[in-house]
Length: 208
Image 1 (cartoon, helix red, strand yellow):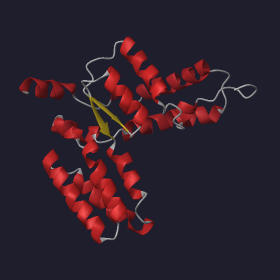
Image 2 (cartoon, one colour; image 1 turned 90 degrees about the horizontal axis):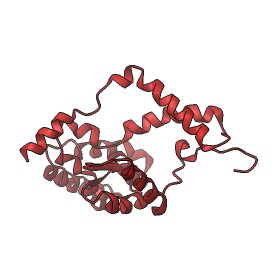
Image 3 (cartoon, one colour; image 1 turned 90 degrees about the vertical axis):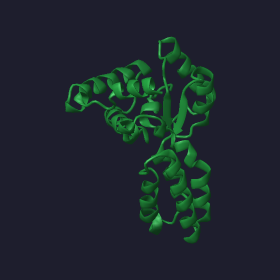
Image 4 (tube, one colour; image 1 turned 135 degrees about the vertical axis):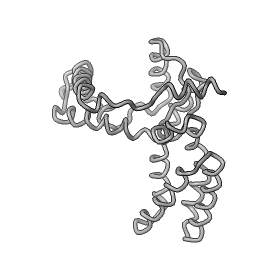
């Protein structure tokens, strides 16, 4: 950006990499750097990303983040009814298996129609299947796989640091600051927590 320095828009959360070409380049770099064996990608419904995944990781499943999905549903819900609908949403993803979750989603959609929220009901029925792939993985992982919000909380910590600086002379400077912040977080109590026990995944694969 001539005269104004370089602002890390990706870190700031403005999502510049929404187009397929950018996601293709990013995934190609990951592939070249050795990322393999991926079984599940969780994201919001960025079509550029979803389309590119099929090219580089065709064996992996893609799941829509449940939280982002329901934020979309809430756009068709009056503010006065958001809390009620939110509770209904939680019931869907609290079921014992994928089939039960589908059935619960149908019940929720029927209830929304009774509440004169036909548009919200249609959104639930149209998109719920995209949010249920975590049921194919170990039960102990379900809570962590339903959404990628924990990652968003981590990125908020990075954004807090970058916003304090504002503009950067180049992308390398922004990357160095982000890396420093992540290194700091990794050294705190947060960094000692195990997000997923991958031994569970190995056991499930062997059983299958």
